[in-house]
Image (cartoon, rainbow over all chains, first blue to last red):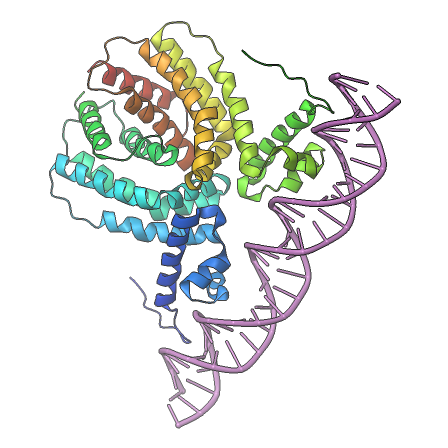
Length: 190
Length: 190
DNA sequence: TATAAACGATGCAATATGTATCGTTAATGA
DNA sequence: TCATTAACGATACATATTGCATCGTTTATA
């Protein structure tokens, strides 16, 4: 049962929240995460610095909030039921977000390394959601070999994407999507 | 021809460099990268803060220096010539380093995201060296399908390892090594 | 023994963080 | 309608960190 507790006092400004998230992602894109300051975000978003501190403990919290917002877009796409087209659509969408906002996601991982509590929140609010979505897609292809664990399979796909995103030595492009599709198909029909 | 230019003046203290690298990695392990300060490293290493600034532009430079130092250990292991044993030895060694110093490597990736010049140095001094080593091992297994690019194959293996390292949702253990070995073998004999 | 550069230390301006406080604004509810 | 409550933008402040400059000292080479 969801309790809709009405609270007294001025409600949180959703416009301000949105402005913060958008200004933040834009600054990260332009300057890189380490050069983004809270004050810079406040000025760019046109809000008070205190408003940011009221809702976010620090920069990484903004990144997490922004990341989960953006990533939910993909997850809400309906599935066709066909393994190949759904998998390819997933890759295309993931590549698009990654190419645009890769820095932000990498930072979540880096921050999570040192902070167990934060790592759990990243997992719950971001990683696990995307994994469940991909799992649903992969399961549409029947004939999984018993020896192949779902966890491992997901790690391989997300890992490959992440690695390219982070290292930047090769692009997230159509060729890579083809290679992923071929390999996954081959492994799933061992 | 390598010119051994002898320089006047007091030579760099290799003891200080080693102390800095060791203090840095220890602090990263304890506090996480974002909470490590130059002053903290200097105090822990027992050197002057100016000595650190003399050799390193900022924290990420220390991380890169430390990472390439540690990673070279693996690469210097001689190969037996047998694909399976060499691949498994590579995994075991990589897992050991990753489990101990994962945070530091993740930070290199995060930092490289925003800085193209730094990204290139990370690639040259660290990533490419490890990739060449794994490539040599994988090539020992004959019968590569023509459709399978070396780049992609390396991305899949390193990606899987990185992803587990960063997300921390599953360990770098013997089971994972078995899964990687089985999958790689299967893909390489398509 | 003169020269040169690294060493540890210390000082300093500039910048960022995180907290506190202020008057103002926008909601609820009696 | 009007008291209550909490978010809002702003501003001030103590604290911490950075990166640079300077100092006398130490350890090399020529």
